[in-house]
Length: 252
Image (tube, rainbow, N blue to C red):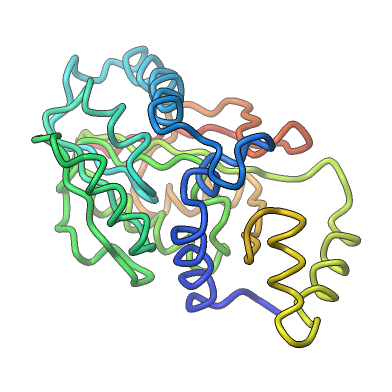
């Protein structure tokens, strides 16, 4: 059964309550609250630096004005973008994530974290951001909703601005058995599904991975008025996946 927006929201609310840092960066040895906050935040610098070097190769300004970090979680990448922007806005579907992020970012004067529990970005005006960015987020959103968000990225990007994100395109292993296993676990009675997941994975809920071919991404964003500037192979979704890092620009 296709994942509903309500279920997507509840999943990330639960993850934000139970183990937000591991839900964002799911290293096997870090579940059950084993991430140290400083260590966790430091990982954001390397990811953002990769995007920043790509942007600079394509002649973006030395300092950006407004940056949006879509799916910001507790602000791991939001914080890293403050090194390259005058102001960074993070937006996320999970209230517990945003609340924890606001605590972490309390001393950051050029950061704002916003809760958005809708399937669009109407809270932001047309052409508001110099860069709209998202990393290891869209991969957890069904295409039905992800394509709407991508169109919104184009709308809220300034003319001459940039849209940068990552998406996996396919898995190198069959998804049939995992889907069957998940269906069985989802239908366990008396809350045994949640108990099993807590025992096996350290969390009572499981987030999905969605795969989108680059042809579909390109067709959508070109129709939304963006130009593809760069695409490169990426394995941020895991070694057993094929994916891409995308860079688009909105014509001035």
